Image (cartoon, rainbow, N blue to C red; front, side, top):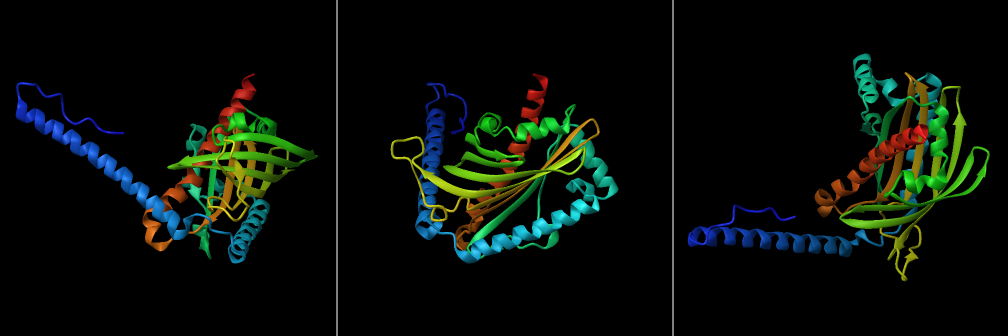
Length: 304
């Protein structure tokens, strides 16, 4: 977007008019130059190996180890009574957090760092974010039913989820297809399949565990030339995705917590200053959108 510079000069003041026109021309040229430079930079990023970076065995193993440590902490935390991550805060922080949640806020934090985790692994980056919301006036089953309505996920979570389908269900075990569309400078479309299990912990608590079993980047989406790249032999925007939901009914509503851990390719050192914020912001923004969309969908379904 170009910013307007100054007011329209009077024809009688030729010098000032020429200065304004010159300023506009210089600004427009600067914008074109910046656009061209960004294009060259991203082209250079592709040439430097950002694209077509295969997922290596050591990268996948390091991610699996990270996920296993999360699973262990979750087992310990659940048995110890800290069902939600805000329960772990000290009294003052906990009071402020619950007040913000009950006022409609969304709490997000980058997980792992507090436990000394290293999110940089050989050939990849791990992104670990937790978020929580409060949905007033609803029951636990209202939230669970919406989350399990996989046939309408493309409605609830549009535009991030472009297509959704329940492939099979066996009790509390689900197989799901989701087509993601992520846009930030570039547009990335991914066909994904997930295995999801739900667990009722008590009359007021439930949690679920989801693993992406297949992630395929789509080339030329929506065109006659559309095709999938071989999983793991793509641009590395998303190689792995693991998700944990926790829901607790109390205080006249339901607290909903979501933790998402993803794996992407790493970044050449010389370009980290520019590219890393771009990559690390996407998981956080997506999580915040997902939580807000969840609240909106549950409350809309409840009002029908």
